[in-house]
Image (cartoon, rainbow, N blue to C red):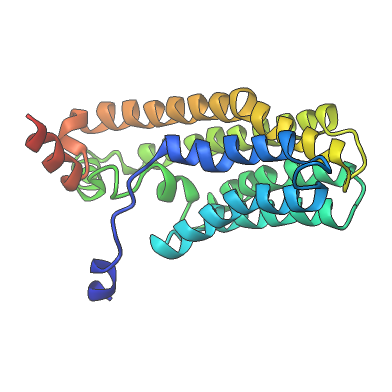
Amino acid sequence: MSDQNANIPDHKPRPWVDLLVSIIIPSVILMKLSGDDYLGNTWALLIGLAFPMGWGLFELVRYHKKNFIAVLGVISVGLTGGIGLMEIDARWLAIKEAAVPLVIGLAVLISTRTRYPLVRTLLYNPTVLDVDKIQESLRERGCEGEFDNRLTRASYFFAGTFLFSAIMNYILARWIVTSPSGTQAFNEELGRMTLVSYPMIAIPSMVMMIAIFFYLWKTIRRLTGHTLEEVMAPHLHEKAEQKK
C-alpha cells in the first residue's frame, strides 16, 4: 500500500486552472458557440461540459481523489449534460443544481452521528494540521470532550454553507435558465449561469468555509495553547522552514 501511495503524485491546488477549465472555457463555448454557424446546440453542450467532466475525471484518476464530493461533482456535470441532450424540462436543472450541495450538506450532518464526521476529513485532517499533536495536548488538558462539541458545531456551520449553496443554486438556475433544454438559448443561459455562479455562490461559500476553519483554529489555540505554526502538518512546516 505504501508503494502505491508513493507512486501517486502530490496534488497541488491550482485555482486558476480550475477556474479556467471548469468555469470560463465551458461558459464561453456555451454562450458563444452554440449557434448553427458554429458548433450547434448539441456539440456545444457536449464540448462545453467535456472540459469540467474531463478535468474532474483526470483529478480522480491521477491523484486518487476518490472522495464523495469529487465523485458527486462529476455526476453533477453528467446530469447537466443529460438534461440538455434529452431535452428534459429545464426546471429539473434547478432541482439538480440544488440537490447536489443539499446531498453534501445532509451527508455532513449525518456524518456527525458516526465515528467519521466529514468535517474531520475536510478541515481537521493530517494534510493540514498535526492532528496527533493536537489530540495529545487535548488529552493532557482534559479538553477532548469540549473540542468534540466544538467540532460538531463546526460541522453544523459547514452543513450550513451547503444549504446556502443549494438555495442560491436553485434561485440562480430558475432566474437565468428559462428556455427549453436542447435549444441554443438554453445553452447560452447555462453558460451564463455557470459564469455568474462563481462570484455569487462559490466565493461567498469559500469565505464561509475560511471563517469555519478560523473558528476551528481559534478553538484549537484556546484549548491546547499551541500557535498555528506549532500544529501545522509536518510536511507544511518543513516547506515553511525551507522558504525562510
